[in-house]
Length: 330
Image 1 (cartoon, one colour):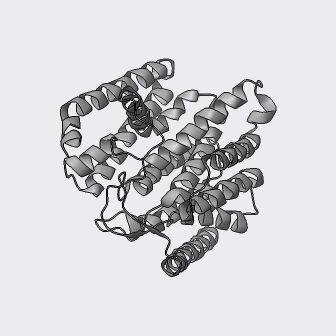
Image 2 (cartoon, rainbow, N blue to C red):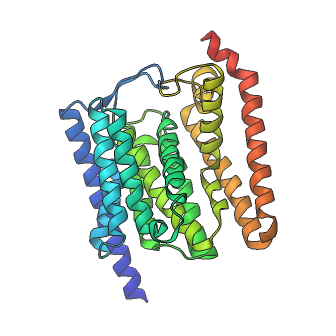
Image 3 (cartoon, rainbow, N blue to C red):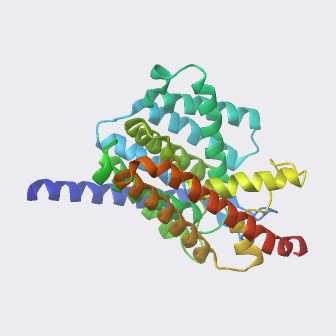
């Protein structure tokens, strides 16, 4: 047992060193080719920062595949596809039709790996494609302040690891550990007052794709759709912000600063790290409650699901009513 633990420790140390090296190399490439994030009307930052540091998430999955006999090949193929198109989108203006087509294709590959294509009614697939592509784009929109993408994704990964270890085994624990190492590297450069890099589309989209795969595995194994609550905080902020913008008759595809986290960071001047930490804590409590009901009060878990998300929606509306005028006056 001691020898096995030492082998694993050495292996994960090597992977961590490779991840750190890959991120540093990417920074040099980004500096050379001017892959930077310039502030726009949606941004909650003012300085010029390297874009695309989240490419480390896909690199982490590729290292996992290399060191652990290339499991989940169809999923990894979809991840590579969506990573490449997102990186192109980071570096030049890409047609939304091309981007959505690639997203659907990558998602279909994920569904194949999950077994949805083979075992679900035909009408289920287009609905799932639309919902999951919406989740990916919502995660992309939420990537606007330091620590948000990295911190929120770290919380979800730790929760998924806990469920996999102590509640129901549904995925390879080694994948989760490698992903945590990639998140650790990214957070070192992003979860700080003055970020060295942002995730970029390549990071926020790829980590959303990876998390969707993991949560999809969980829902397939447990046969419980309620675990979609793992995206609960992001979901409420994104869905209700879209509804708000539709009420205002705005083009929902144009940049904006109307998310709750943006109001906190921009109008209320709350430090980015505090806002991100608040989202992390809220998602931890939300999911922790669902896990408790799933384990100890199984028949009541959906009551918790709808009541907790309903309360979160009420809190969103209350916050907007109280503070949205600050955005109008800014």
